[in-house]
Structures are given as C-alpha cells and as structure tokens.
Amino acid sequence: MNLNNRLLPAFVLLTALTIAGCSIGNSVSQASTSASDALSSVSTSLNSISRSLASSSDSSAPDAEEDDDAMYRAEVRNLTAVFFHTGGSAAEFERDLGALALEYGITDWEAQPATYVGIGSGLKQAGVPRDRLDSLLAGLPDRASALLVRGYQAH
Image 1 (cartoon, rainbow, N blue to C red):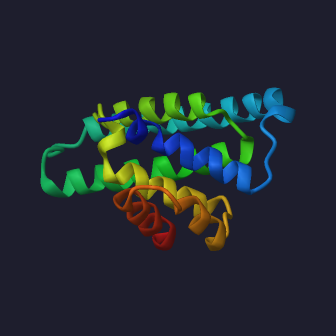
Image 2: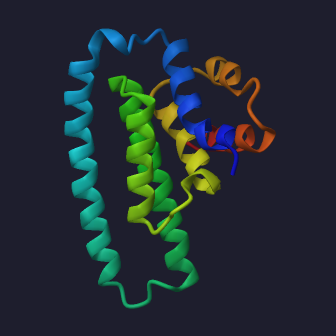
C-alpha cells in the first residue's frame, strides 16, 4: 500500500477540521483531555464487546463476521466524531484507529472498506454538511470517495 492511501483517513479528518474552522493548535490540552476521556470510554466498550464475542459459541459464522463488520464501522464512526469535535491530531487519530482495528483482528485498516464507510458516517454524525463533504472528496481516489459518501449517506 502506498503512503498516500495510508494517510488518506488522516487527510480526510484534518481537511474536515480545517473546513469546519476548527483550530487544533488553540485547544490542544483541552482536546487531549477530552479525547483521552472519550477514548477511555471507547476502550471500555471495546473490552466489553470483545468479552461478549469471545463467549459467543459460533464466532466464525458468516453472520458473526457481518456483526463484527457492523460493530467495527460503528466504532470507527464514533471515533471519527469524537476526534472531529475534540480536535485530536492526525497521529492520534491514526494510532487510535489502528488500535481499534486490532481489537477486531484487522491488521491493515487502511485497506478495509469498512474503515472509510465508518469515517464517512462519523463525519455525518459530527455534523459536517454535505457541501463540505463534497469539498473533502475533491482529489481523493474514486473508491475512497465512494465509500466515504456511502457511510455519510447511511448515517
């Protein structure tokens, strides 16, 4: 995977933050505290989900895989919305997105369509207007754009 595709989720989030007029530099300590608190809650939630999945008798069934995919997308959506509202850095977003993916057994989150669908849904949840989403999509690969739009419209 080339570097451009790897950085795409962070680029999308940072562009959304810039378009919305967020100032990351002015509230780093507040954002870090808020993001840390929110991520602690997400971590607790993920641990609970992991325990319930581990106790499932048939976790390899296709329905279970679809459920995992839906839960992963929902967690990516929530993570994106939290970072949009708190102004977390791209490095923090990528780190937390990677950790989240690992909780679901995903080692290459950049290649997962569910990641981009979740980010699109998170941007909608964060209140990014459609016209601003459209400006974000300019210059992105068609596949990434289509997945972001799909997530945005599905929310």
